Length: 175
Image (cartoon, rainbow, N blue to C red; front, top):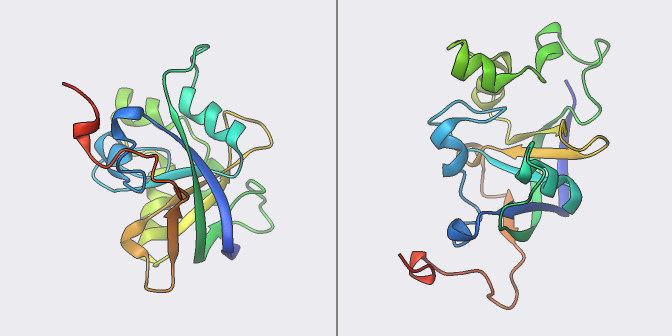
């Protein structure tokens, strides 16, 4: 397994649903239904290394892009698992071979635990802060999932919003 430090000041991106743009550091959305590397109930923040990768991840399989707010993040985080080059049996144990499993089908249709959730459980329990991994939506792109629960005082993640353009709370959106 490869472990890296991000930063200082590594840049990542995420498209935010406008209604929830006031909480750009939250992993609650992923916790509500689960994600590739987090089961439901586990907060995880998914980011991308490039705006185009973030866009493809946001729109998923849709040909149309729903309304979105692009946010930039600046990160300095230690102890991140680096799977960005994909699975290589020389670097990874065999349990990592199925990191790219069809997790939605496995979890929601088959009602089983996806292998990627088991990997994330292990990573979280070992104290790692996140996982860099290849985008399955944007070939050549790289994503990052972060587990805030493992952050320490030396880890830094901030949204780049120098002019305060992101909304401050739900009152920004009429009912």
